[in-house]
Amino acid sequence: MRYVQAIAKTLLGLGIAALMSQAVAARDVTIGDLVGRWCGDKTNYTFSRTDMIVTPLGSSQLTHPPHWDIDKVEAKDNQIQVFWKPAKPGNSTAFELSGNRRTLTQLPQTEGDKGPRRVFHRC
Image (cartoon, rainbow, N blue to C red; front, side, top):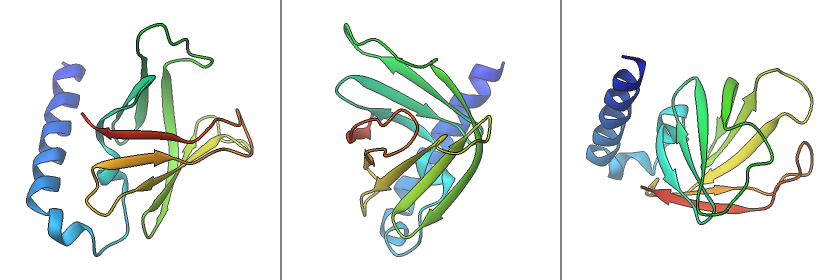
């Protein structure tokens, strides 16, 4: 049941985003812009408003658990900072969305796991 609800929310979010693509570029990003599936070269991300699931591709290995609970989100212009539970220093990830909201760039981290820059596209 939860899976079906998550899919329905994702499809609704994608539909609304597609209808409002021109208006979207003129406003700050929100968690709603992040919700849905993002495909990368080594992993895929699936965001809801409350969590993120990481799916490794091919022989990629995860260095962290695949499920992340979202504590809070801060957004400004085209950047969004996601803070993960448990709330502690360095337990966040910064992202940048393209103007058309079809490309998501995970910015390199200087704290936490010090992950590299990663680029994702809407699946």
